[in-house]
Every structure is written in structure tokens, then in C-alpha cells.
Length: 263
Ligand SMILES: [Mn+2]
Image (tube, rainbow, N blue to C red; front, side, top):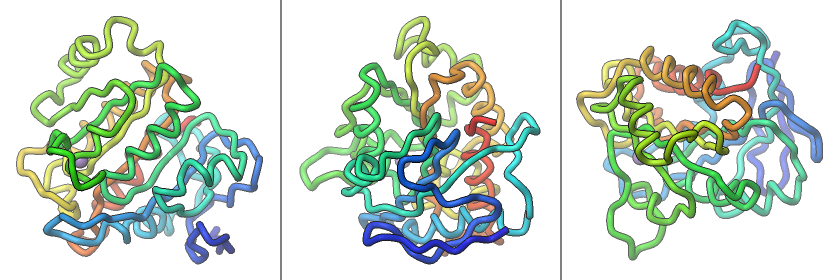
């Protein structure tokens, strides 16, 4: 089923997604989807601002309620797209309540306003980033896709492809956050350049040596299991449709996002 959306000034007013209803102001969603189609420049490859449409429409032909990684339907609603600088104010104004926030980027800088907004709601929030890059370049010219982690107000752990194994993942999170890390509210950010270029060619800053898409999906499922209701948000960022092949990067991004959904 496809629905067209009439949005406000903040919302893009013409997108469609298979089986997902529009979020009404003030309603409760198990999974609230929001797009942040922003690119700040500074990348060799442009097009991250096109990704929200492509990732949503990657499910277009499925004609289903979305099915989560455990085979059960995912109940989700979609608030449309919002500018990163209006993220916090829009969320407050619309009064959405949700168990889990599913965020579609946008370049990686969009994670910063999302996480800082959530930090206002969850004092002990922590951030797990899957990325081939560290994203802590020097500051000075404002928040961008290479330095945004410097502007995040919560503790973070960056998981790079060399530390992809699940045991190493757990060790890394324990080192960074301490034992019992799964007992604190957590946000997961997935840069698609963490995935092997063969499976995810449509990214802003390609990096050879990424992990298999299946390994990423397994890590998401394991993390979601370990965290339970403490997993409060997931994003997929840096998808760059003009450099994609047959939409495969967008489709993988969609599946990663939904593997982090509550179902
Ligand atoms: Mn990144």
C-alpha cells in the first residue's frame, strides 16, 4: 500500500512508502520513522540528501506490513522528513511518543542533532557507531560528516570493520561503557561505508575492506536482543543513491534499519 503525505513547512510533502502509515501528532508508535535528507557538502560524492526517498521506496514492491528480523510484523509510522536544525523543535512540537526511533539520513552529520535531542530525554544515553571512519576530524567550521562526533554530548564507541567480530564488539563496548553497558539507553548509528563496497557501493566515502551485509544484520539483531527496550534509536546514514547499483545500498540500509525495529 502506498500513501502520499501532505506535510508542513518542515516536512517533505510527496513521498511514499510501502505499508507505513503517517504518524499523527501526539500518537504513540512502536517504531517512529523520520527522514533527515541533509548533506552539508565536503564529500567527493554527492547525493546523500536523496537517500530518504530511495531507502523508503526500497520496500515499495514488497506489498506487506514490514517484517522484522524475528519474522513478526513491524508496526511503524512515518513522520516524513525534517531538517536537522529543526529536528528537536519539530519532535517537541508534534509530541510524538515512540518506543524506538528509526532515522533515515542524510550524511553522517545528521546523527549529532538526533543524539543530542535524545540525550535531553535520556540522561544516561550512549552511542554505538558502525563506521569505516572515526569522524573526529578537527572542529572549526561547524558540524560536518567528518567531525560530528566531537559535537555529540554522550559517550560513544566507534566500531570499525576490523573489530567486526561479535566477541570483539562486546569487548569494545564493555571497555568503552563498562560492564552492564546493555542496561543503559543506547542509540546505534550505521554508516553504510562500514559494509563491503561490493554490497554497498552507494556511499559518500568508499572504504575497501568493509564487512558483509549479513554480518552487519546479525550484529544489529544481537545488539537489539542484548539491549531490549534500552535500544531507543537507530539510524542509517551516508547512502548516496547516484553511486548505487540497482538500489542495493538503499535496500540494505532499509533492512539494517528494520532489523533494529521492535516487532
Ligand atoms: Mn561516518
